[in-house]
Image (tube, rainbow, N blue to C red):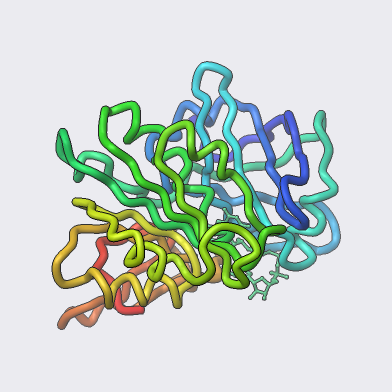
Length: 257
Ligand SMILES: Cc1cc2nc3c(=O)[nH]c(=O)nc-3n(C[C@H](O)[C@H](O)[C@H](O)COP(=O)(O)OP(=O)(O)OC[C@H]3O[C@@H](n4cnc5c(N)ncnc54)[C@H](O)[C@@H]3O)c2cc1C
Ligand code: FES
């Protein structure tokens, strides 16, 4: 089976201002094995040479469908927001390494920490960990009430807590302050969001908790060939890590942010 496929757009709808939920159908869904992997989307016209990477948010194997959630950032995502059901998009993937579910033992509790548009890959993970019988707690952080999405969806599989920076919804403050205020206890954490959030998580939990973080970098090839997406490795090794190939999910202390 080839990694590239023209997939059918089933749905593309705005969830919150500038945030879209895009559902695609195709054979390659069969290859999607891990929460946290991503796909590279080819955009037609306007000189979009580089594909745009997006995390897989939900995998619906029986229907051969998967979902991404994206935020309009620039020209590419603005174009993507205009794509309608019935059109086709060329998808390359799944790519990269996802969140290891087996790191969580029976009876253990997982804490999922999502920041803004870093939230989507945690959704498939929440579903899988819940279905394994583990307790799942999700803490999501957004700028304000308008930016909040997927609270109800996450609550199907986990205990959900929301923080907004301006306090217009849920707790006023960031996700780490909320976790501390609630005194949440957990065995392992999985996180995706802005680099500053991931760095703060490393500093807070890197010494005494197990965990995995998903990074984002500007990408070109998406398959480890161009070294355009490297990040620094922790420790003495001279080799950098490619976010698209060795990641995007890394052990909590595996990379230096
Ligand atoms: C592994 C991976 C998974 C991702 N998953 C998602 C997702 O689930 N949902 C989502 O909305 N976005 C995701 N992104 C970011 C997404 O790829 C970029 O927002 C998108 O490529 C921007 O394209 P554009 O043409 O609209 O913007 P551009 O015109 O290329 O850039 C506009 C702005 O977006 C920033 N930007 C561009 N590329 C990236 C990037 N790779 N990471 C961070 N900022 C970027 C630029 O710095 C610039 O400020 C992911 C990125 C990676 C690497
Ligand atoms: S994007 Fe080319 S090596 Fe990662």
